[in-house]
Image (tube, rainbow over all chains, first blue to last red; front, side, top):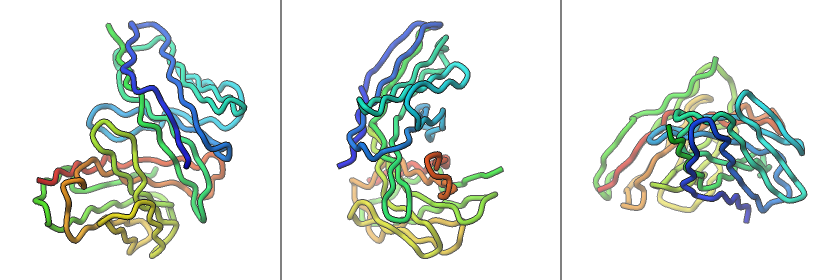
Length: 113
Length: 115
């Protein structure tokens, strides 16, 4: 059973702070990991992906991957109220002729003005 | 650039009625296509995926079916809806050949309420 676990939250941080979102996965065969942001009532939007151990930065966002610990995180620097959303972590694995994503249930983030 | 469309945006249907949701992708050829369902406050559940015309793989046994009659068209259907079919239905596409970076992009979704 391929599982991705996230703290459901809600997580609240003040504006300007660093928000830290965490994710663990069960399948060591998973090679790539994706972070999506989902505003209430909307579809998920890709933030970034990571497949190498270590950190990957994209603007205010930093993804971190530790394959030995099967742990993925997303840091949001200088959090803004517009970052308030649910953040979905997903692991990519191969199944037959396609690659599939297994999603966590998401962490709800609220950035307080 | 690529664009993915879904319709209808919202749908209210009685129990036992049929269902047809459509998804089309523009600006790419031979994409992998996916149908997901998201129940209220839950994560995304993969229902079906397709790597080509007429090729459908089912992930969850249920009263739903999917078809891919054209390269960039993906249809989700049901003959008789159940209350448990209510949810947010999302179509997604990916290039399919991008290896570790095979990113899925989501359509705007269809919110289905079964009464």
